[in-house]
Length: 64
Image (cartoon, rainbow, N blue to C red; front, side):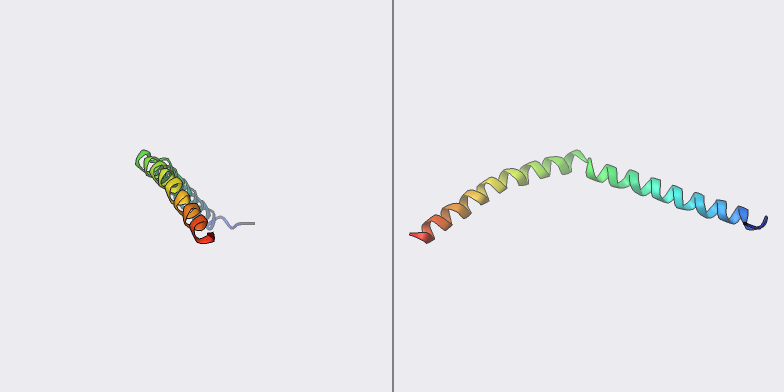
C-alpha cells in the first residue's frame, strides 16, 4: 500500500497526467475538425479525380 507521505505525490502526478491527456485531446480534436482543413481536404479530393482521370488516360495511350 502507499505510504502516507507518498499519496500527495501520487495524486499530483496523476492529475498532471490527466490534465495533459485532456489538453492534448482537445488540441487534436480542434486540429482535425478545423474548417479550413476540411475545405482543403475537399479541394484535394476534387484534384484527385483529375489526377485519376489523367493516369487512366495515360495508361490507355501507352497500351496502344
